[in-house]
Length: 149
Image (tube, rainbow, N blue to C red; front, side, top):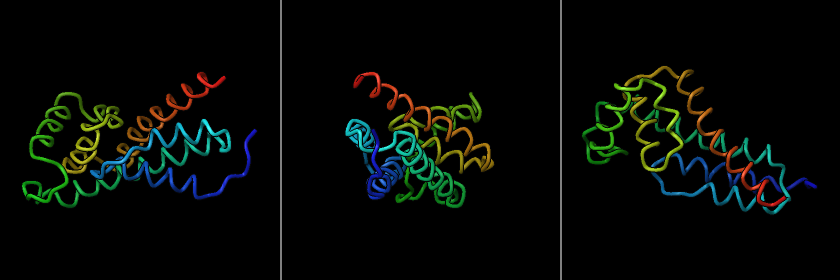
C-alpha cells in the first residue's frame, strides 16, 4: 500500500540523482533502494524523480561541454584531460550509442560532457541518456521488488 508521501522525499531523490550525474560525488541508488523498501512511496514516482534528476545532471554536463569546450584544458574544467580523451576515443569508435554507458560510475559523466564538447544534438542526447538512466533505476527497482516479495 502506498501513501501520499511528503514531496520532500521525491525532491531529495531528484536532488541526489542530479548531483550523482555531475562531478559532485553523490549516491542516489542507495536512497532509491531505501525509499522503495520503506513501502511508503509510489515506485513509479520514485523512478521518475531519480531518472529526471539524473538526466538533468547529465544535461548540465552536456551544456558544460558544449559551451565551455574552449576551456577544456583549463585546470578547473570538470573532467580531466585523460577522461576526455578516453571518452572521445569511445565516441569515435562507437558513435552516440556510447551514451548507453552514461549510467556507469566514473566514465558516464565524462561521456555526457564529451557529447557536449562534440556538439551532439540535444534531442538525440536526451533520448539515449534518458533510456540509459531510466533502465538503470528500473533494474534497481525490479531487483528490490523481487527481493522484498
